[in-house]
Image (cartoon, rainbow, N blue to C red; front, side, top):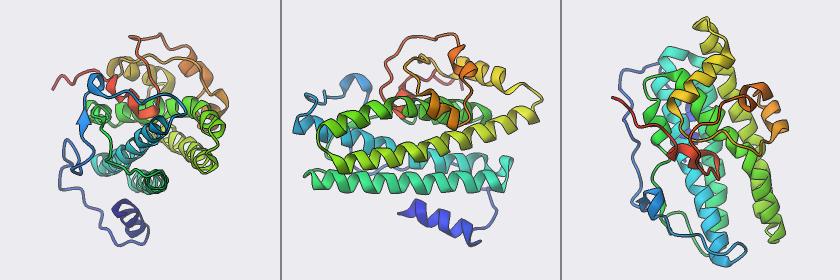
Amino acid sequence: MAARRVARDWRHGRLAWGFEIAMPDEPARPAAPELLPPNRMPKRGKAGSERGRVALWHAVAHIEFVAIDLALDMAGRFGAQMGPEFVSDFLDIAAEEAMHFALIDRHLRKMGSFYGALPAHSGLWDAAHETRHDVAARLAVVPMVLEARGLDVTPAMLDRVKAGGDQIGARLLSRILDDEIRHVRTGVKHFVACAQNADQPADSLWKSLVQLHFRGQIKKPFNDSARRSAGLPLDWYSGLVPLRTSVITHPREAAGGIRPSQT
């Protein structure tokens, strides 16, 4: 995929350090899937049914597809400000998200479906749009809230997939969980650097940015061990005052819980 090629070209010095062209407000999209607002998304079907399994994996594929753009936008939009290590980190993440997507799409095709066969959530880019002017806010919300939520919900999804006898799917989710721990850790690392540069305590800055830009609820259950491995201290998120209630079922599905931009 193009994202993996970009990351490879960057590692081998084939891309120049140049950020003169502004990043678009939204990335280009394929003709399919049809993007629908959350209240128009069809129900997935009964858990364990063939329709339900296909819908689940299609939703995960869409999340990973948007994650490619989120990582590339992070590198392209904020790279000049943050430096080469930041660019390298997020291009590597984009390449990993592209691998996740390719593996899930292949899994879907073995089930007789493909990415684009079903509608998908239109709100997953809202987090990027809302935080497009502030790298600290982007890091606070996307890796440290939305992707961190994936660490919480993936184990239950993994149990469900195993119970359905989908061993290939279970291995895919295990791999994704391990990779997402690293992705959250990368976000934490660069967020802490932003806080240090601003001479502010990282925990209080994170909480203030989440309260400003995210209207969903930081809610249990937490996968404390995975969050700890990712560098997210328990006292940061357990002490966060709950915001407006919203149901979050997967890391970037929570992007629908973003405050509308004021600009």
